[in-house]
Length: 259
Image 1 (tube, rainbow, N blue to C red):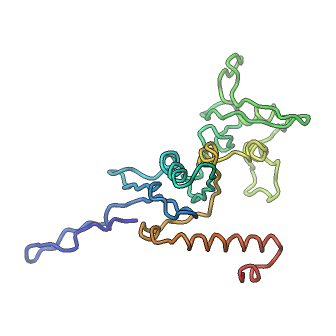
Image 2 (image 1 turned 45 degrees about the horizontal axis):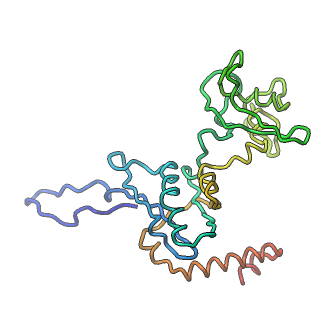
């Protein structure tokens, strides 16, 4: 949102035009939380004066900081011990970022060479047993001591490497049900990679709470947040529960939403 803090009127000499700002004022980024039990959590609110010459821009790191220092403490202060939060997060690019050591094939090369992050340990199932797989070579490795493993090495250790396999599919577009046409596809479909959580989810779950990601949307102004009555939140929450129960029972859209 914009501050709209420009002058509305002023004095100028006859025949001259006032010099006005080119924009509607300083930009403000607002990150807020509405709780279904107490309403708007004012203590969790975070305002950023965005711009190169101000506070910078909103990032995933700033949201993590807000989670740890404001959102989670505000929820826990508003409720007694034993309550668990289900935090529904706006699915923006910054909020869905992964940890720097996340198991993510987009951060990996096919063969040794080039820059690559050091990933956390992975795992795979062998003969019914879960096997931990380090993603970094051992310190005494003859060729790559303490170096991150590439996709080919990881797949070879899992018995999944195929001779002639490329990093990505050479075709303009892979088949919808393709599972083994290129190395990134094979490794990316492994359970340890598919179960990789975002940094936001890891932080929330580390302190005993839960989270789900919603479709991307934009917050309204602070007045709109403050004007939402708790009873309205309760009513919509109960309505959603009724709709979900109806869908689980196999009812169609019209019967479900007529409840």
